[in-house]
Amino acid sequence: MRLGVIGPAGSVKEACAVIETMGTPVELVRLPYSTYIQVVEILEREQRGLDAVLFTGEVPYKYAVRHIREERPWGFTPKDELSLAFTLLKAGYSKKYDITKISVDNISPQLLYQAYHQLGYEKQQIQVRFAPEDLYTPGYIESLLEFHRTQLLQGQACCFITGMEQVYTQLRQENLPGMMNSKAFDSIAREFNRLWLTQSLTQRQGDHLAVLAIDVDYLENHPIYDQSALQLLSMKNRVRERVYTFAQRVGAAVFEGGDDHFYLCTPKRELVDGNNRLCELGLIEEITKIELVCQVFLGIGFSHNTYTAKHFADLAKRHARTYGFSCAYLVDETQRVVGPITGTRKLDRTNPEKDFSTIAQRCKVSAQIISKIDGILRQNGLEYTTPRELARLYGGNERNVLRILDKLEQAGYVRVVGKEQKSQAGRPSRIIQIHFGLE
Image (cartoon, rainbow, N blue to C red):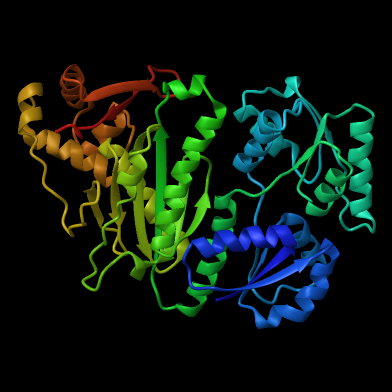
């Protein structure tokens, strides 16, 4: 793939350095500019000779979208909560700036307040001056420079945070206190992966797809929550790094749904060998080694289109959660459920039979009944259920099912997690969690 990287010289250098460390075969075409309005001229000249275009920031991307047609896949490295939190930490702890009074540009209030919240600040504890966003008006850079100067010199702000390299360079030359909001490694890697996958899938239209859905559960009472916010962010970033490193190994694009939810998308052939067997994953084991992590649940879905593969991956992930401990499940094109896959163990094409005799002896319930309940939970991907719903799926009398559940609860295999909300009169049913994963 021939990838054009467009942005200020410093940002282009940073993005290319990240991409080069990822080991993906790609030809990088560096396209630096001195001001963002030059992106139109650059794209008119270069776009047709590229396979994809990566903007190093949202501003040049937005400007280009308005002024020129996208002839190749475009993407930009977005601002993210983690990198912004690190920028604020560096400003406060390294530069000794007062980060409770700042002026910012090209950063949304929601993202900024989320970053502050990660550092232990509430909205009422900080004073933020947001610059007007008017990038389509001539002289926008000059207006940003004047905005920050005014806020700093009048005492409305103690430092500035900017996403514009040109603004940062000029204000620092004037010896005004501030920081450049640089991009984190994973935000650059994430967007590059998406562009690479788009290009790869275009070339391999006959391939089936694989989507991996990953949930990471963190320890709720870990001492780090009461200690350093920087260490907490750093440890969570290690989880991201593991995900992105694995994604690179299997040629996958990564899409995040927060600190603890990830989706990976790749051609199916990257995950299976010539005999259609799943290759060793290793990702679960790598993530669970991180001190803060409690459990990792991985669902894998195979299908001919992304939407169905994602649906199957979510279903497989629910099966993994039902199992109760770090593992993976797979739902293939025939909707067959395979698993659990734990650690780096290779996938068998058959579900392992479990020995329920020990549980049966403890609960004084037949192993056949326990096996049937376990099968119902797995086949329906139920992490939580109610006695009424379980009785319906079991096909028996609710009173008999309640007696079975009472015995399982006394032995520690059933946990009540809440009560069902009811709009009609009547006693609300309990919401329960059942798992036999210890056996």
